[in-house]
Length: 417
Image 1 (cartoon, one colour):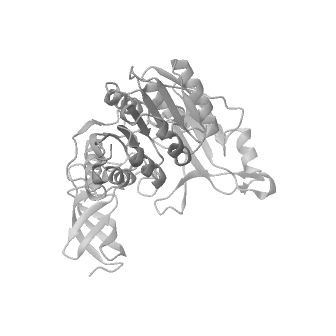
Image 2 (image 1 turned 120 degrees about the vertical axis):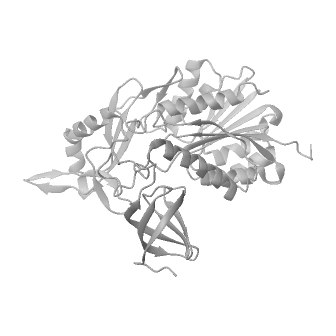
Image 3 (image 1 turned 45 degrees about the vertical axis):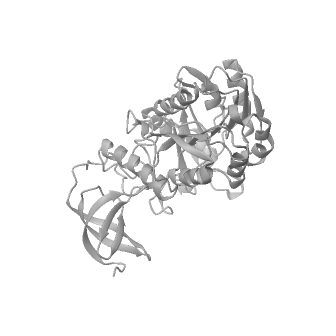
């Protein structure tokens, strides 16, 4: 039996979602971060549970073919990246397998449509248009106050000072130093009533305009100019926007292609943000668009963005779980498409219940968390209410454990109708 501190040699035969290598031994399964499929490795057990153990990598005895040297000196300490030790094609193949495994294990899908498209990132580094650094309490040095900025370490508790992040666009590295040298940073270091300094956010938009701010975006920052597939968007600095625009273009284009030929009259865009999907859906038969979004600035931007496209719309500034049960029954189920792009926690139970009760004919569900996606798809498809028609993966977050998934669900005829 395993015990903390016990050392053993293992062979890694899989990569679990989250990035840990999986070793199957006579004593049970061991999860080991920063390993690759095919590694023979010496590991030390750090934690033991009923059905598995966790270990830390002590030494790679025989490296797998897919290994490479990490680009960042903080890799293995910083909690941001999990896959810098892998060649990018190996990472992307692992993510596709993880998606299918999770849909089968959590979603209980015995058969799945082909993953098409499987969209890899054009660049595994230098892709992020936004970086956010946590702040440590101000420290005094030579009669002046300074603030250190960085990320949490992989223990999710300890702080790591960072002066450069290779995932960010190169311009953001220069912007970080500009922000630290700014008068705004001195204000952050000298906050009133001994308040702790706030986080630092760096942002660059599609036009190349750069912004930085501490804490929440101040009123001095105007809306950002973004563009996807030749569609212009105005985006408030605090509003959600995908951090990898080239991959986001493929995601939005795919959802449009899936739905452009469907017999639709109504689009209900839940968790709508600034109207990214509502602006991109080009189905010529749509006569009404309903957007549901709780962040007030995002709703104002969405109104502007759809007006620029010439699309009439109704925008409701509420949470999806409050608005959808009241509004969805007003739309004809047979010709309605609902787009779901929830946060990582997935859809609330009230939302899933409403969708099953009203049963609009088409659901496009976009997710950045395959575990909550699988949970929600299982609830939606239970008893044959919906079937999973299309499935695609988009590597929006190379070098990290995360990726984006798009699905299209089609309602099966209800026996009560």
